[in-house]
Amino acid sequence: MTQTTPEAPMRRQRAQVRVRTLRTDRWWLVPLLTFLGLSSFLVYGVWAIIDNSIFVEPYIAPFASPCLAAATCPEGAQLFGWAPIGDWYTLSPGLLILALPGGFRLTCYYYRKSYYRSFWLSPPACAVQEPHGKYTGERRFPLIIQNVHRYFFYAAIVIGLVLAYDAVLAVVHKPLGLGSWILIANAVLINAYTLSCHSCRHITAGRLNHFSRHPLRYRAWTFVSKLNAKHQPLAWASMFSVMGADFYVRMVAKGIIAFPYA
Amino acid sequence: MSYKAKFKVWRGEGGEGRLEDFTVEVNEGEVVLDIIHRLQATQAPDLAVRWNCKAGKCGSCSMEINGKPRLGCMTRMSTFDEDETITVTPMRTFPVIKDLVTDVSYNYQKAREIPSFTPPAGVRPGEYRMKQVDVERSQEFRKCIECFMCNNVCHVIRDHEENKTNFSGPRFLMRIAELDMHPYDVADRQEAAQEEHGLGYCNITKCCTEVCPEHIKITDNALIPMKERVVDRKYDPLVWLGNKILRRK
Image 1 (cartoon, each protein chain N blue to C red):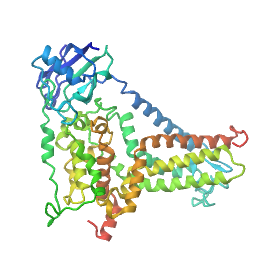
Image 2: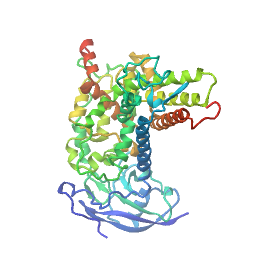
Image 3: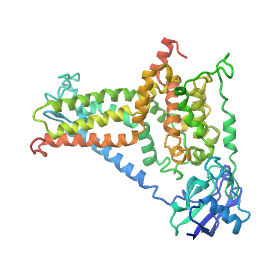
Image 4: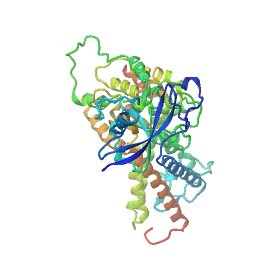
């Protein structure tokens, strides 16, 4: 059976293989699971913005923290009692801050790989032909905006510290409930994911050519590099932990979860 | 213990060709390149295949086995089921000379376009003094055996021939990163990486890392750090301001 096909003249010299790929393994499985995982995160995020059950003493839902609006943040939910957004704001408190962690994940080098593969199919998997006729990469608008990642990283550091503070408040509260441990686990994973970021690695010492002249920065780079090697699992673990912790707090706030020491 | 394996091997010259069916003996411990050699010896004496060391160190026998870029000499037959049909094709990104042999001169052209190591003026060979910690990062990239499977699998040129003019591929962007990270190199690599060698085309989908037979972390340790250096140089206003105030180059 002849496998030749007429193609563009510039491709004529390559082996003319008619099929998109000759791979025989289940190459489609990972992009499919990634698509489902990221889609579930997006759907949950939309629901979390609409839902108003964000606080029950001593827990605050991570998707709504820090709570900065005077009108929509219950007493005790505001960060240090601070509400810089006045009574005029009556929408979801999550809307005010979700763009920051959301932007951090959207521009993250790992998530870029995952959604370029699973949503845009560029490519869907290695050695599988992509369906697009043209490709310009991250050289021009809008994808050139991905270069803003480090600024979202700075914001993510602050958000991570706030989530850690929320978790500490929950842990020191008596009686100690299951939610406290859930918030602690979430804060650990979120901060580990944030510190494992490629931009963080670059900022610590990656931009230097003489590590030996900056021993402290080099040690920080070495530490971040070890975390960076786990960036992908941390991205997934922290994504599910923040969804899980947020969902748990909302269920407790609604009274759906009501067992002792919840 | 031996068995008969079913193979489909690309045969043809230029781009025209077809997959030919073969049934060939396989013995314990053999690799795909052994089977290709057996085909040459017994059934297809004119079958063309490039090879040299049979030890995964020369990078000659790059091919696509069941659609995946692999070294023929490092792909064990024991990784396949005995009743599986194994398809062997030439690297898809490069023009075919004959059968499994491709013309990889695109890569040599791109290599020539990168200015070589450029030490500071006044420092002569023999006067370089570097600490191990300063050079070990780029030593990882020196493990490259130039099999060109990373460039072959990169969709930027694999699926878009027209990008070959502006994109040098992961192998040579890694070479630029190696030079840029070198303590004694003073050439402007960052501007060249972005504007001349197409770093911005890379969307970091990591296929280059997945196929590297030397397990070099091309994306994490070369391409992304290089992208971050380019951000320093071209897109980060705070770094620009800091460089101006502190008079850093």
